Length: 230
Length: 230
DNA sequence: TTGACATAGTGTATTTTTGACACTAAGCTT
DNA sequence: AAGCTTAGTGTCAAAAATACACTATGTCAA
Image (tube, rainbow over all chains, first blue to last red):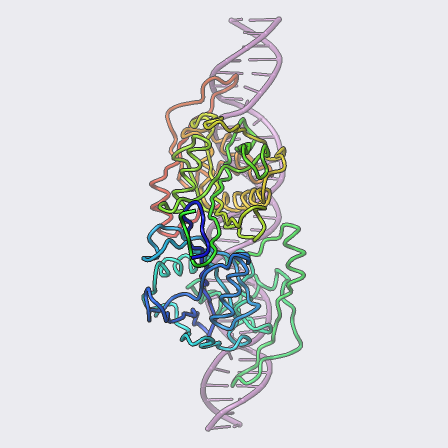
């Protein structure tokens, strides 16, 4: 026990809620099966302890990489969970993050470690270890709230997408259905999508035009006070 | 050094950004002058270390009480700051909170400890200790963002207030000016204000009616999906 | 007591935004 | 070539946002 302090210290952890968009109308979450007590064999969020010489953000990225193979994805801090008894064995405070992953471009990233990793539909989540159910609930609420005011939805789609895919994404995340013409009118009026000279391939019907999110234009507008909304 | 661990542990702290509304059109922040190194004599956010047997939320409330005398105020978690070198002497991760205080009802709460406490106008803040400037910037951004979608502005006003006070508050926080008639139309249509049979006193002009925020009605509506907006 | 001053309080007309709604176009399959 | 499936498009009505100016009421001071 080589590290001694004058006062007791909590252990600091990070946990990541990873959202991925699967086939249309299915939002999924990546969970890891624990291989150690407490809660051995239970499903849990990918995460781990913060090292003493890395920032909390860096710890979240590292754990995500180590446990799921995901790298360079959208990752944002969610909330810090600090109840005294949230871990039955030690005082552990966890900083939760949420990640948005596009499943097309970041392979399914199954078990990278020995640990089992699996994508679950949001309405079929198992009961999770620790207070992770609570963390998941907070993450879903955040995603729903944020997707309407910030263009983070694009993180869940491939770089090139159709307007129908985009609409379906919003319908899935928000849990409502939108009018096709009104949706297209609104999103195109923002002038944040680049229309590509390409169309969908491999579909058994009229191929849709592909679009791309214009990130640099968005940042310009955002600085001038433009608000992305719905 | 009686507390020993197998791996090194960061020290966990809380810091509170305390907003108070002073005379019309002046939003202030409560700062504490540090009496210990590092950053001795510099202004800083009220805060301190999380005890091993209290939740992080409880630590924030306790520190706020101990350092400023404020109790039972609106307090919400803001963000966790976890850069490696944010404290020059030890690895300290801090969970930042922000508080909204109505200065009329919670006395000016000056120096409760020996430490000096002082309210600063937001545009006259001194340079702060640690990364507290960054925390303050995040808190201001959060307040501006949140005040439009949640009725937290009322936390800054006395229980009974006039519509002009409410409007001035929004103008101050958002940094813009609003049309009086349109503002009143909008806020009254929400049906969240209780019109009292009382008027302002002690003013040298026509006295305004006093209103009160109907919290229970708000919670009912919020559950049915009502959104407070502007 | 009355006039000056300061802020409270009120309505309408215009513009903009939202929301509802249905058909033709294009590409693939059989 | 017929049938299937999704892409793509415009208009009208309702609702919401915005711009805008005068009267009402109380205090204070001359």
